[in-house]
Image (cartoon, rainbow, N blue to C red):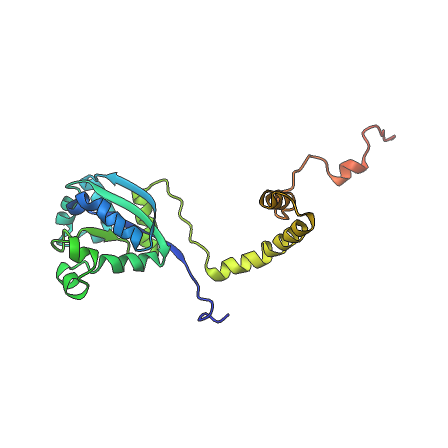
Length: 220
């Protein structure tokens, strides 16, 4: 398949955090997020303990700024958000801008960190670096989350072709023949009845059981 004509599209999730320094601006930032094409799947307002911050930023342990980072992130409430859209991780990084505030203001003056950040530590926002990191961070903030990778466009088209399209075509053909008053309801009922993937109910009787009649007595 020509990938230039049929690109593989992934609908990703990423974690965003509105940090303590801009917690009071959360609604304004969320509005920017929504206008940038994201859907907010989950949202929590919470305050982390220093120990929780240490666990969340465990990959930064041992660096000189680590104590300051955990102290700052536990200093006040935050807003944790699960965001989704096409290429969510890269898109959110682009909207946030560089973590270094000076670089953000020089290279991307319209980005959120350039607008809201005041220092490299108090840079307003957090975003996941990769798919693996996003999964870990979302589960940290939202422990009951179930995260599965979304199928690519190619995988979705293949599934529809193999498992859906033929049945749907039959259903639409029958719909045209019947011409019911409520076509959507009729088609929904038809698809439920004629679903080839519907589990078969086992009543406990096998073919061998049917061949054997309970009134038959085998003589020895």
